Image (tube, each protein chain N blue to C red):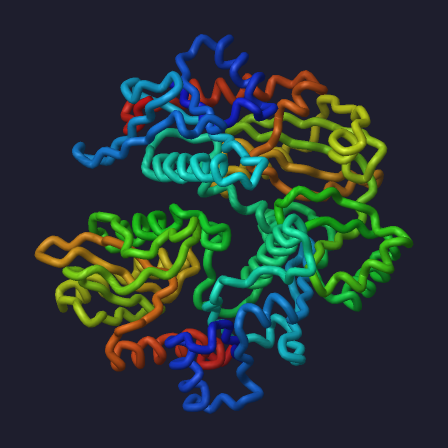
Length: 259
Length: 308
């Protein structure tokens, strides 16, 4: 069973949804909903003791034990807020209780979550993008010259950035794949591929298996920004298609490994 | 020099200032309650980035060797207060991310208790016994858990937004109908003695607490009842695990809460990354603030990139 949480117009989710049927997944194998549905009407139960965690979710009237989930694509719109039946103080309380619970659920799921964002992201820590860039630059053994594309940190929130600024080169890391963006030299891709083992470790540490990395162009590239929530607007269809392939591969990795 | 980032309204502040003064070490303060009076300049001209903190008693010239952080909390929604404070804290946190100075505690590593069930899973993975726990918004699941625990259940928030643990009593059954609106953390009630273990680097301070309420903080804070706090001891293996767990989160200081039953079961409840250690110190007489200051003084670095 695959769970897709995203806006209905999200480019990557639509691409993944297309591939679900191509991979032989039927309607009964996929649950697709937005984050409003998830937070407003899904039931959750997370149980733990000293021996471990287990639990279940009921989404759109379908009950799933944690170990029935094979993969989760988590690309929420992030505009959810509790209903107006609460006063403002209770709204804030309900918001944080809901986020804290769902963070624990996604952390406890024994399957791939794309992306399993850290608490800094959930808490809108405006230094989170910088932390990502510093870490990935280290993994790539490249200098970091951090400058955020327009849109970062708008109104005190981490929001997905727009396309990289002109003059940039960029690429996507999706699991083990390195997918060049519309502007990217072969040399930079080769360099990134050669650092695959360090990028793997960075992905493991951050929980981010699909990101866009922006670089300053030129002979001595430096990492400029890491987008953990690439929107793919303006990307050529072949880049979007390759990302779709890579993500469905990640979501079905357990099935393909026969687990 | 030791740099203190925090709030002059914080209860830890006066004790910390007194101990710093007594230690004789040079220190400077950024009082985030007066955020508009400070500026943080990031310099890119050197081989590595450098930061200069100016305002209050900070001149941007004196090298900083270690840093204590306990960010101010804006107890208002007034944008004239929240705006400058948030901006200053974002800049300070950016500085901390780029600085090699030892920090008590790095904010970027202090998020785990935002999600208490997540943190509890980390405690279990580290080898601590933890109470049987359920997080749910489903009344049927909650009722089943209540039966499994034979009616000995407490409930509390899943996030770090302030909420007290409460015993599940007869009058609470009626409120189960509200559960679908907000998940709640339920736990088996571990009846016994409360312990707080403060970790400061490799040092530990164990405090035993006694109060009338199931959550001793309610006795002290909400009900204004006096609580008993006294120095105590716990097995060395437990204390070693506390030190290792605190360090594994990237923290220097941690406040870990435990319950010990009469049969000797020791259950870990949570770790507070910004413990109000003066609350315990004021009652037990344990020199926790002094240990914090000694850690900051002892671990100062010379090759800094922060100047205040």
